Length: 249
Ligand code: NDP
Figure 1 (cartoon, helix red, strand yellow):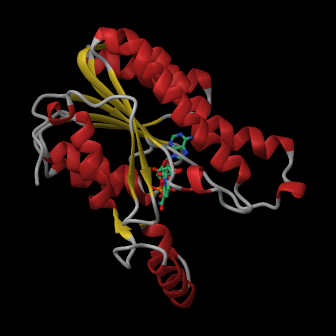
Figure 2 (spheres, helix red, strand yellow):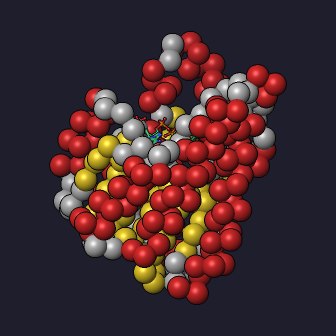
Figure 3 (cartoon, helix red, strand yellow):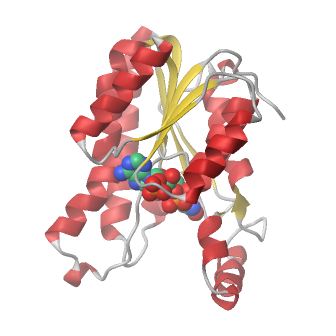
């Protein structure tokens, strides 16, 4: 199913790889104009830029670290300069690490919360004057935030807090016609699987597949669809929700 986003101006963070890349391309193909960002130069940047050239619309891929306040402000400033307004924001950029809680250093706790939670504050806070009636914010959470995951207390704490942020903002911004929702992915197969040894990837696939009703991992396209739905007018009466996209874990 394709959802029309013709002429919508979107800011999508962390769009050069994985889920973010899937959302950016799906949004561009649905007719949106997209500004996205990344943290470090890589082939993924060139690849996304090339793929976006195949789509119609006004798209921009720029370097900006949303873990840094000045950079996040600059990113939203670019959106203002290029688009004049925003119809949608997707807080997708995220980082993860796996560390036993007893060994988790304070600076790693801060790093993970900074990119996975505080970045959403920075972006929404700065973007607020650009968001009008009918606009939509989608925060990418994690199914693991509700379930809990060993070695990821810092990450799941950040993702669980995204739900509180989302519900409060839904109530505060609802009267202005701004909707705010979470999409919580289960295990989505990204380039990370391709980058690991085949045996390990197959093992992870088998383990996670057993935990889902659909008996498989999700694809970035299957995650992008629900995000586009929440960005679109098809979801005009949905706000404050957490939409689990997890194959029925
Ligand atoms: P990837 O690591 O594959 O891609 C992350 C993207 O975000 C990259 O484009 C990366 O750019 C960018 N990014 C990371 N940090 C920053 C930053 N500080 N500033 C700007 N851009 C940044 O991640 P996934 O696609 O796997 O995950 C995307 C989101 O989905 C995250 O929020 C993650 O927590 C969530 N999620 C993913 C799941 C999965 O199974 N994949 C499951 C549950 C949740 P660069 O290459 O330059 O670093």
